[in-house]
Structure formats: C-alpha cells, structure tokens
Length: 132
Ligand code: ZN
Image 1 (cartoon, rainbow, N blue to C red):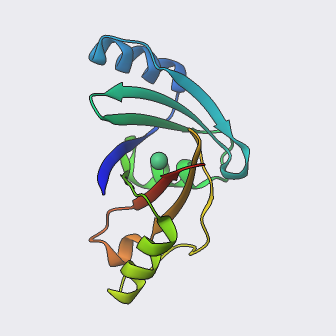
Image 2: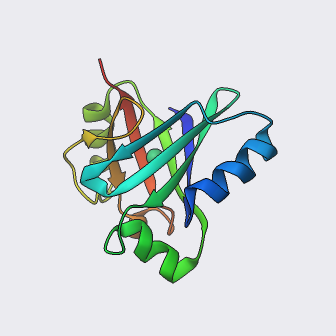
C-alpha cells in the first residue's frame, strides 16, 4: 500500500482551487465530476501522492453532510492497492467493516471502496486501484 491521495472536503471548489494552487505552486492536473457520488473533484500532484479536493454538487450528498457536521477539513485517506479484492478480503478477515464491499468507479481512473470510520478510529479510509 501507499498513500495514493488525501481527500479534503471543500465548500467552494473555485476558492479552494485558488488556495491550493497557491499553496502547492501549481495548478490542478484534473477536475472531474463523479455523478454517482454527486461531487466534483480537483486533483493536485504532491510527489508520489495527490491531494483531492472534493466539493458537493447538491445538499443531499455525503460531502455536504460531512461539511455541515465537521466543517471543511480532511475527509478521507486513500491507500493505493494493487489488488483491491484481495485487500478487501484481507481487511474483512482482520475485522474491518466496509461502507460497501463492492468496488465502484471513482475519480481519476480508479475503482474505489471505503472502510467504515467506526472500524478505523474515526478516519474514513478509501482503498483505490488503478483501472486496467
Ligand atoms: Zn478519494
């Protein structure tokens, strides 16, 4: 595993894009909407890892609810894995719970799955694997 990216929940992608491009000294390399999740994402390269800004497309989506509860902040930690099905099996065996055990299409050409924060010390953990 490696830290593939860190997801940050933001209210306004335009304002946060401006902030992060000044912070990191370069523009995002991709902006992408994930309609199934009702979010728009913006990606920055930071060495071997990435920052993913995540903004809600509507008020009912999980990012809106997250921001309502906790404000804008770090939303999830994403581990890049080679074989997502093997990792899901390994982590289930080790007692971890998943929000959904079925990998779904995510942003940035990945399939993704999320562990439930109640089994990971309150941290939302994403596993992601590059799509073939
Ligand atoms: Zn992510």
